[in-house]
Image (cartoon, rainbow, N blue to C red; front, side, top):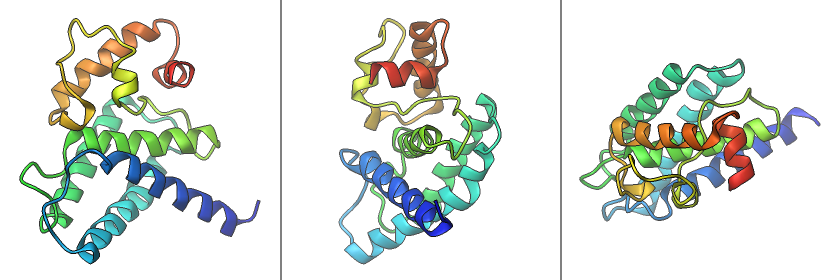
Length: 169
């Protein structure tokens, strides 16, 4: 496959992941469509150019958490005019990064990611004994997210989180 086709596929996957990450997140305050498009374009560019290259080789879980935090900081900085009072939340950030990584991994563009996209379907598959009673769009902290990841690790037992999610999604 030539580079133009690969770039088209990668761009399409990022925009699909974007749509999935913001669709129910109540992310925006009332603002122009142009401002939202500019925010989306800048955030996806940051994702593609700064974060995704870090996954061409295996990425540690510690580095993955740093990448989610970096995405949150960037999006809050460039989106301050369009984001509501809660800003770019942890749940939205992890969904965008993790879903993009899932797509890229399934097509062998990156190595296996350390986490999977957290959404309602995945939360419904885990034991919620030690997990906050949250919708993924309400995850606002690394601590809340980590509790969900730990519950997934318990469910996955002898397989990776990414493999477990592929089997259970």
